[in-house]
Length: 211
Image (cartoon, rainbow, N blue to C red; front, side):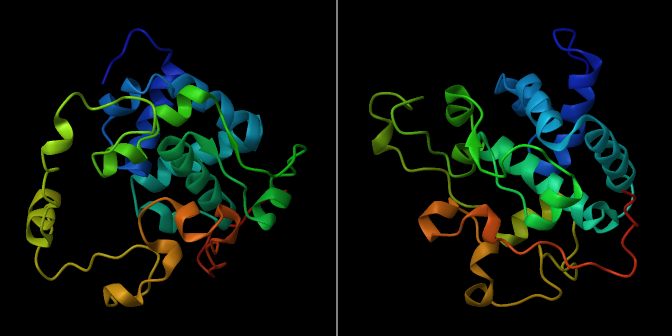
């Protein structure tokens, strides 16, 4: 997708964020926050470390996805995804904060007021932020679109019936057995700060990190 109004660097960043967020490049550009998010991520991670992450994710996205990332790079990927969804840069896991040798405070913050309004999380449930982007007069009387069935999702994703769909789990489990930090929705409503979300366990096949 070519967008003359942005730099090649921003265009590449958006391309890398499509598989992270699950939203199309058009949707990411439509927030108007792509350049600001790129600047935020690079500032928070560090220019050199961010360049390493981009290279690692570019290679991983074309192969096995997040499984090819190191624990620190997984944490950076999570933070960037969180940034697009909520408009806030999250508090990183202490291990990742130390590995990146960050000099700033490890605290969550909203990038800009506009970032909160443009958070993609509102679109995941056909909602809107309080006090902004009202849906229009009378739309409260219109029921939201129905949630797609598992069969429909598998068809849209091109998956057969035997394919296992799971995120962050080693095997399929019942819905009531899914850990709360993996459930969708606003974490604050579940009293789960980003820093409390378990990070990826160090695996024997994970790429080594060099200081």
